[in-house]
Amino acid sequence: MVVKRHCVNYDIKISSDNLNVASCIEWVSAPGCGGIDVFVGTVRSETKGKKVVRLEFEAYEAMAVKEMEKIAQIAIAKFSVHKVLIHHRTGVLDVGDIPVIIAVSAAHRGAAFDACRYAIDTLKETVPIWKREVFEDGAVWVAAHP
Image 1: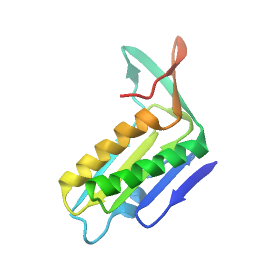
Image 2: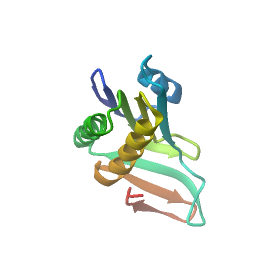
Image 3: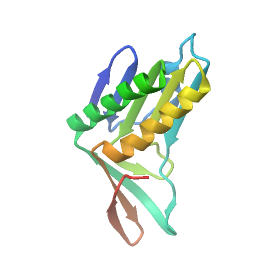
Image 4: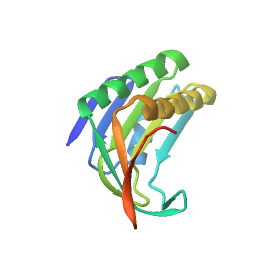
């Protein structure tokens, strides 16, 4: 399933499909932008000394998309950036897979850096997406907070 919100300045997506970093960068690129900042979250192989087998993401999709859209709108207004893209995966992800991509373009790098950090930090605090870490000896639902 794919849930999207799209306008001229932002692109929001929650999907069980693989995320594509190159297409995300291409979408935020613009001739007037001298800086693009991209955050790519990947599934790591270990958490707190325990081997991670996989991650499982679930979302309240309608609410998550609305919250992600709000993050993009605030980032555009607060940091004067040109475009914001926020894509998140759901479902089962293996080590090395990409659960989240945030890409931001701006006239200057500082605004892009600040908006990208704001977007990922706020996403983890406010968006109803839940992560289950599966280890060799069990599993646990974890808070998405940094």
